[in-house]
Length: 79
Image 1 (cartoon, rainbow, N blue to C red):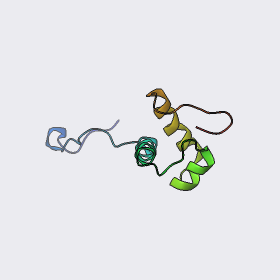
Image 2 (cartoon, one colour):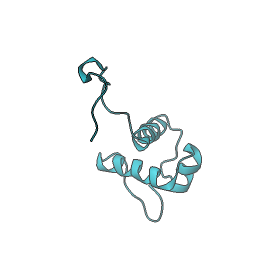
Image 3 (spheres, helix red, strand yellow):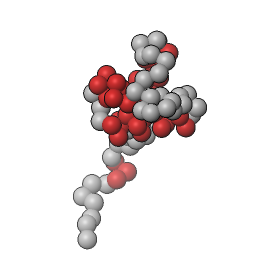
Image 4 (spheres, helix red, strand yellow):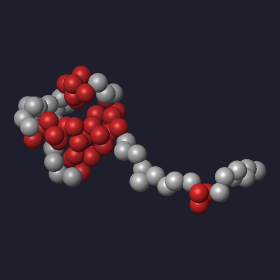
């Protein structure tokens, strides 16, 4: 087994968990949409290029925004 070397009560406690990449991306997409830096309809590929992220990260960010009723899926790969 394992035993802690340091007293856990002496360790600093972080303020919450770090934000996931898709959370940061969802925030960036929302800011850019509000500032009208994004068109009304965007594709996953365009978001991947704009934010230098992978498809899964973009889709997860869009799902978070869709769950909050901020974006809706359009036909095809558009949102």
